[in-house]
Image (cartoon, rainbow, N blue to C red):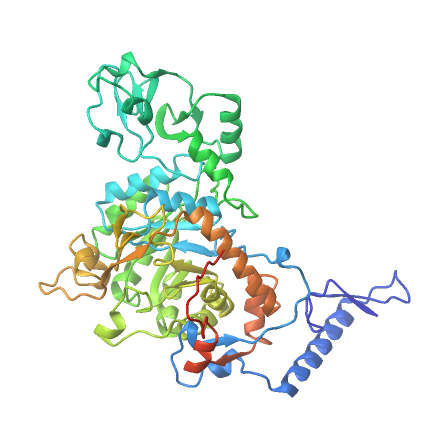
Length: 544
């Protein structure tokens, strides 16, 4: 007898038993189940004989609050190539993603550019709520407006206008010229930044030197079709992107060529039923947030995150019930929570996903200021253990500094990871770069910082009605990371290699293994030092 389609472990239940002495004979269902159970039992007994490491259930029931760095997984059996590791997952009960990555709803992390890039990678971005409702809805629309991964904030002028300053171009490579001077007018041409800079008389009307063109690309052109478009239009450097008769974006040959050089992820982007990128947004739990919710639904948002540092509250439970009654087709993610008790209340209220983490972010001071929270590894395992019984996916929010942390979060039961600092400082993150001591930096601040609270995020900490504002976060800066379209694919490859070492071919496998065969240990301080770069006078650390 042989086991067909077994993924390494001899007691894997997804196996087919075939009698090799009689190829046409396949055992009955009862015999197969009995055989699989016996093999599984023998396999577990063999592992238990070695008593190597601890089960997650034993490790996380000792009264300690562990972070990701505190624990380490013991390797399993490799029975498949790394290319066969499948990272597709669930964000909520009803929304699937091709990679387990979510960008955090922070005003220095996720706006339109980040949301579009994350969707193009196969993840999703959650647009922050630290702006007026109409502005947030506009960011959702902008992220969904075209299918190329990059976003350019288009600038419009009429043929009779003049460009008097380089600042008129903002951050775009060209200015679009329409008969009305706005996005709803008929396209008549464009002016490239380089052409304007070569112009002797800067006050010359645009009509006298613009590149005349009425060509445009439809909004649903993806990168492959945009590449073909520019190959057919030799000499054309820019093209407007039009949706519903309105110019929504502009694509440049240079941007398209740059994107061609980035690594591609298997599975494609996160696209909704209408062919647009999937985009999420955050709201609070106050009465005014019901109006914000209405704006977001009208803009086509795919999922809404209730953004609160402590989600187990009367305010959030009431909002969940309101949302499920008013917009029953809209998926709702509740949180933040770190205990099974908190999670149980939100699950009973009707959430479709849970956000786990309290005080674990690099810019968060909640544990220090309020003396509440939990180590992120313990929080993810405890909440996931309960949520999995109800089929509610968990988002591990915070504490992600490297690919190993992602492997740990997912293996402990999370379905996705939400990242702030990991994505901050990238090309797609909001804000301008500054140079300090020879390094390019971008601002990164906690939504609990006093600076962010002045914009309205104090409602997240239920402090919007208080006269005295208490900070639960800081303002800092992070180094330039380049584009997420480049470094996230490399990160996902590292995560795949981690899963291969564990012997898990998918997130489902990892979630099954954490309940049975996966073993962990706690690392001492010396072990953590030994597990990193050490003993060198100098070194250069390049992740890819």
